[in-house]
Picture 1 (cartoon, rainbow over the protein chains, first blue to last red):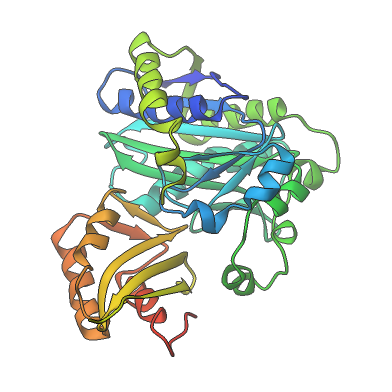
Picture 2 (picture 1 turned 90 degrees about the horizontal axis):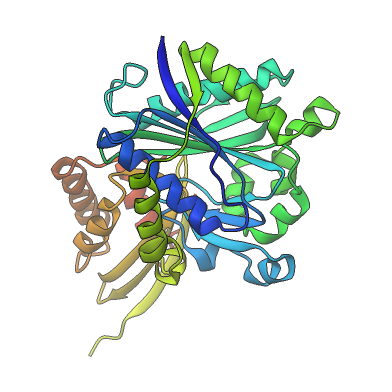
Length: 255
Length: 101
């Protein structure tokens, strides 16, 4: 049975460092400097923009200031997401050409690599299903979004799961364009998303969901996850990415 | 001297993602264009190349379609949530009298 590394390294109060680590791992996996890896992590109040999004168009900066929300841009496409302590992030980095996703097809990446999270949520009792293009839904409401890329010799997929997030802040800090809301026939962002807690009708922690997804990944992909740490080389790459990219306004705001 | 006009549009690809276009037009040609949105495109840095290729192209469907098709044929770019034609429609939606859908 294949073994993947399991990493819980996180910097909840430093979203720029979280994103630096997020990029350092697939770079190392692609260069054969690290094994296939699953990472779990949290951010405090943060908007994470997709790499193609315009910060001024997507972000309500006044609401960010009022709520202490930080903005960081990720290296993958897709839409803006709001992170807080009730939001669990997971990331899967595989060497390019891995049998799970043999083709360089991003839709295949999302479909295959969402399955572990879907299975993990089902194990917890949530009736989750993958919804193309890149969502996990429960009864038509989004509980998780994913993004990903194929680069640096790696296949990369990451997602954020709304476990017990503050949906009211989410609705304030993000400007959701009318054209998008109209398309989904719902009046607001809060009405088209849900949380694991609300679906289960009981208190559930992000640790519970993390443990469920570990089991979901192991059973979906017939792999064993073994707890590990980042190599010195990965940490050095992350530090460099922090200094040159993710802590910089030019990267986060100038698009 | 012809002055530049700033134009913008939001265009939602059917069943897909949002394209947000901001451009400067001079004499019915694109002077510069910025395309943003929640779509996927790999390799990610190819979007800059597309934006550069669109400079000085007439703001007309035929020319835009040729250019966008050439971009996707000539690069290994792969979109998800947006088809090549959606880029054309999004840019055209910024023209006065046109509208995104």
